[in-house]
Length: 446
Image (cartoon, one colour):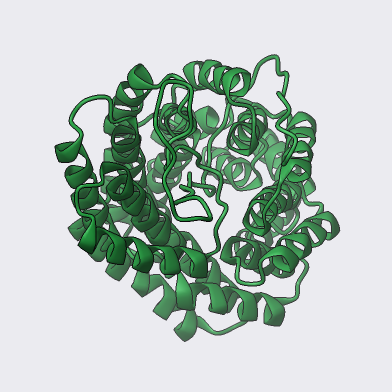
């Protein structure tokens, strides 16, 4: 059994961009556990304990079981968790309506005290980027079972994605106190990262990796460590963590993506293209498509780059058809690689829904792309107000300051971005160096 330590923290908060909550599906013998206050249900844990192949196999097994045992509410909730996890790992948003149908069946069979179904609805809403609804369902699930690990984790995610960072901190600390383990650890680590405390974030993630008891848990935790190291420009360390993840699960796409980004940061564009192409072939999501497109751009292949950027719009149409709010993804992708007017409209819609550091940066950059730098500046400043050490955000702030004639501030922020993560983007990092050179050559104002 893994050691489930409690992580003692002082102040901090999570945000994930990239590590969505997953749902473990059923026990190895295929039987759900009984549900009770303080007891684990079949869908209670959110630690990713299964590979993508395992998830597909479990979906088939659950579907077959439910054909002959259709009045099992726990298995319907478990099937929903499997659909959500498969959508997360493959980008197949058509699984979300299926997940909703399974949850409806579960709740119809057990209308009262069905915390597994309520937590499932919370996870489904989060996957669709409807974080207000996600929070409401997570609270309802915790009212039934205050120890539900999945509801505790999704509640933290919802608060973070709504920009309610102080409440998210309290929720993360509470989850660590009542259900210490990898879901709580990784969220606390991201909370620390958002507040600029990368040393503590790293310590917590190392503890999570030590607690990992399955290949998927190892891959999940090691990839989180790799992402943190990459964001701080520690590329050798990042690659070592991704190697650990891929030894545990050679098909773990987040680790392969991280390795691709890191290879691009080190100038190995051919290696980056191999990794990112493999990822996009299986998970054609906006961030991955944009990363591949920018790597093609840096490699001197604009036609291939444009093909990747065009696919973002296609993804958005499909995702919206399956109930996913795509405004933030659309704004980020379209600002530099699409229609800036559409990007700005999407960024405004995203900001209306949630005031996070990520939506602040997206809105700032979209405003800059439309020449509205005075309006962009406060949003760019807000994106870094928590202490978040993000080189891309700092680069965006610097370019906006430069456009406003704030040369000294722009110079400081460009240098800071490049010192933090000198290869933060295959196109952005060279642009940052060029901007810094341009500033250094400008005559001082008289």
